[in-house]
Image 1: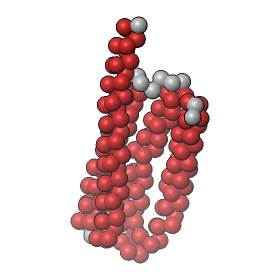
Image 2 (image 1 turned 90 degrees about the vertical axis):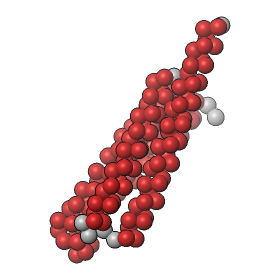
Image 3 (image 1 turned 90 degrees about the horizontal axis):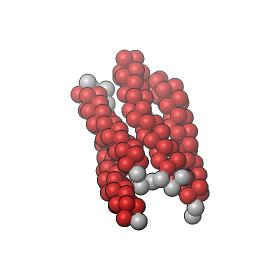
Length: 157
């Protein structure tokens, strides 16, 4: 596959994820407000909706960073320190979101506005955030090493 094609696929995936995430962020509050109000009261429903919407912010930030890496793919400038820093920033966003989702989930549970089954389901999401964060951190490290090697090899030529 050419770099242009890979870039197009990555950007298509980012757009699809952004559309799905945007749909959930726009529709979730209206769908869940009544259900959450019945279960936990009006204040509990607003806490839940705020918690969920705030947890989506780092995910959209990561999508923006992936878009930037797709540009590097298109121009075949992947093995640079700039790309490594971009991916490292994405890893930090993913880890911080995992911490926020974990702690928020526990706080909502301790406030008695969360169900134990939901706690377990959200922990699966936290694990997924950690896995993607680790993958991004590893990728960042090896892109940085590849950038160093590329700089050395260009210096020798």
